[in-house]
Length: 251
Length: 246
Image (cartoon, rainbow over all chains, first blue to last red):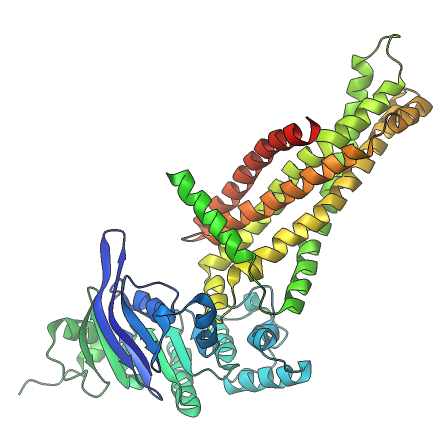
């Protein structure tokens, strides 16, 4: 479980997050949603320690992450897998080397063991025969899948995904969503997903936090998000013609 | 104020870079890779520039000391001294600042804007140590070899110029390059080279490592890396010359 308590963050004079408290449950897909520029990615980066919050604390299963030194953080970070918006694969390494990279840095596995693990992780994300390809030769969806394979190679306890569906076609986006959901259950991970894709929200949103103007505006799950009477959330959820059809009739 | 901010952040980056690596064998391999990328890949350009630099120096020298009062072996002597003391360590370092500096800054800048540096940090790897330290160490090891090669080729270039133009006798030139040789001059040149290598790698790395934005900013970081490391080289050249030759 990951807990963020009263997190505030400013950039210059701009208040991006204001006293946001969240509780990301273990074995569930926890979503942070909201329009662009509402502080979703900033919250994710504060939780994962890429940005230092001005106020507030972050706990990983009770361990006060925000008060740790870099070396102490390292221990927790080896338990974290992260899927970045663009994949963030290392350009100079091929697919196999990218997946093996964390294992090389932090384990004493033999090359054969590492290769077996890489092949397992790649097969887990339904990727075959791409081991020797470089990131520049992969499609957007394949990059994301390789990034997921790399993220799970160390059997993480926590998985963070920053807009996993951005720039993907609906089928691939669905595949990635399914993958995140399956992996979360399989490894009993605490998964945090930042998204503004309503399909993802309705498919994998077991716990949902809606941010509006840097504040936590609503929390719930995929089952009660459609019944919300929160006007800002309604505006966000029922934007497209497709989601408008899901809007419950009054009375 | 802005200078102090950047200087402080630069020192902080160096402090982070010189921390104990996570896995030393990986870093050793990284240093080898960087020596190839930053050093061996520059052999061609250094060789071409050095030969022509030596040739032009000796021809200019021949035209300028066209008097029977100065022996013609002076051409070889002055060419060697100029190359050894200034042209090879400083001019070649400035050229390397352009080639290697822009490569380092743009590589790290691209890694920053595509979140590859964040990915390293999330994995629990110190990105400064992993990415910057091997570049600094590799440059400090390989650049002295490049400079020594440059010295040799520049002297050869001067000799070839004499042969092809007939401006000075070959034997006199060879006698000149062997005259009044002081080992300390080589020490001086190598010391300067090592300091310049450190400046090129670290300043360019700084410019790339803290890039924010996109492609435009990566280009800007690359330009800044070259400009600032060149300025630092020229400034440090003056200080080192005062310290080592005074």
